[in-house]
Length: 361
Image (cartoon, rainbow, N blue to C red; front, side):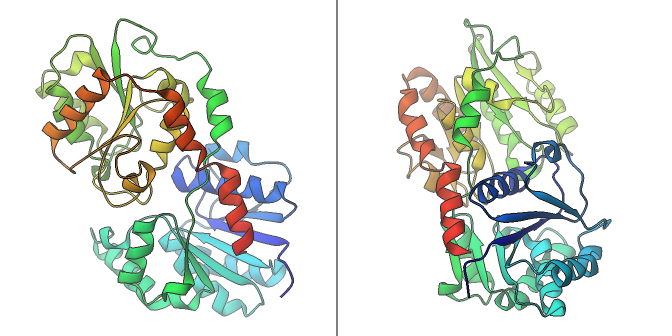
């Protein structure tokens, strides 16, 4: 087959999130290399839509749910016939496989997994989706895992063969992050040089382990240390109550959604990833790109790979608030070389990932 020139990238929406930012970076990078790129969305909504380059076409399937996008996606494949359809995340992968089978076009289907299927068993729906992945993933032409841990998990939990899965780290717009990191920070604690600030953030949900982070921070009794926990989600109110119960509410800030988290990372003294599990841990690289020291749980999967087994930041046991507190304290006491962690972030630059995707497609 000739070199593909048209690529459809299929996902739910452009609401701010890790996979959505990857889609944005990938579509931008591929279009910059001369590919015709369609961003094929279950629902064309979300704040990141404004950042999509003009030369990337937005295809709105106008579906209310992923499942109901099956027929619209089939129509897209039949009418557009892109050389490659690249699908992101488990549920969209299943619909993409079904639509691909129904469409009977020459489009090659590449699915991608961003989380570990072995952790997606919290509900009956999760278990059904995982079963669907086991049954249908081999019908795709190829699969991409965003970390070595996710790749290993796919081999364990699906019928995919070893040579049908590539591992490509998520792209990170390192230079753009650094540009935004240089902007003034909009938080009084981060602007106060007399304080040391521990920073963390993301969607407030059990997976992120923010309850462990609060317990760890409560062990740090110095009056000059603060914790800023940006983001929101279903656990926000519970985390705020926990901070009150721990007696640290005056030293913990919940600023909610932050327009420019990179200015926060640039000004913070340490960034903490406290997750129970991850698919990759993109936020660690973002913090490192800003020159911020990092501490992370050694969760599955990603942090160990990003930090090269602790070479570029401390790795602690999942759920151990004492070990986490000790690692934060040690990181604050040590002098960090920002250039060293920034250099490591360069290894994950978007051009590297886009080049690998271009070769794969």
